[in-house]
Structure formats: C-alpha cells, structure tokens
Length: 131
Image 1 (cartoon, rainbow, N blue to C red):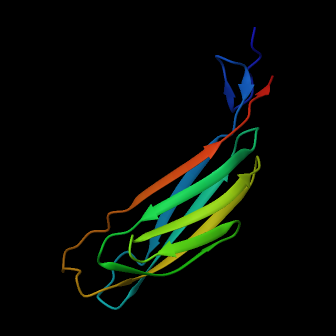
Image 2: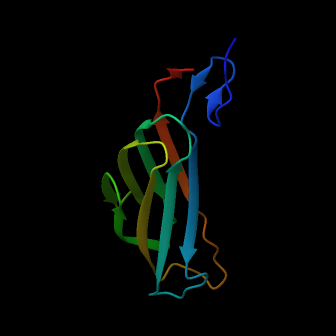
C-alpha cells in the first residue's frame, strides 16, 4: 500500500510530488496612457519534491508595451513583436519561492474603459520520489 501522508503525494502511485503555486499582482490598479503597470508573479513550491525545467510564458495585450522583465532566479527574455515574456527558471526546490517582475507601459491604443487581460502559462517536470 502507498503511504501518502505527505501534503504533496500522488495517492495512486505513492510518489512525492512538487506542489506549485502561482500568484499574480498588478500595480497600480488603474493607469493612463504613458503610465507604467508592474506585474509581480510569485511562483512557489510547497511540495516535497523539486520542480524541474520550470518555464513561464506571459503574453500581453497590444496596448501594453513591454519595457523590462527580471526574475529572482533563471533567465528572462522579452519578445516585443510576440508581446511575450519568457522566464526559464530551471529548478524550484521544495520551500523555494521565485519572484518575477514585469514592467509595461500603457500605449495610446488603450481606451478609457480597457481592462487588463493577462495570459500566463507555467510548465514543469518532476521525477517521482517513491514513498
């Protein structure tokens, strides 16, 4: 029988797994043309196993110009033509948190009542540790 008493465990296989969290905040809550929006993404692993090959892609709307992207771990790249920020974090150990900060500038295509759609994808792999 599988001894899955840990928080991050697959009961079907008895494998300890990562447990990934993703939190997005944006400031300020409103901005005008020419103002900066800052997106802060916090990625964490509260599981018992490392998450490997963590890769995050953020896609932004046409009325936000990407100006900078930094990560507390890994490599960031900006594609202004594709309107994406890619972050190759690498491994996130159990208990580790990574912070990504993306700055954008509101351009003149924004309308008065435009909302901020945001699309982000995080992928990772793990190799099971049997309980």
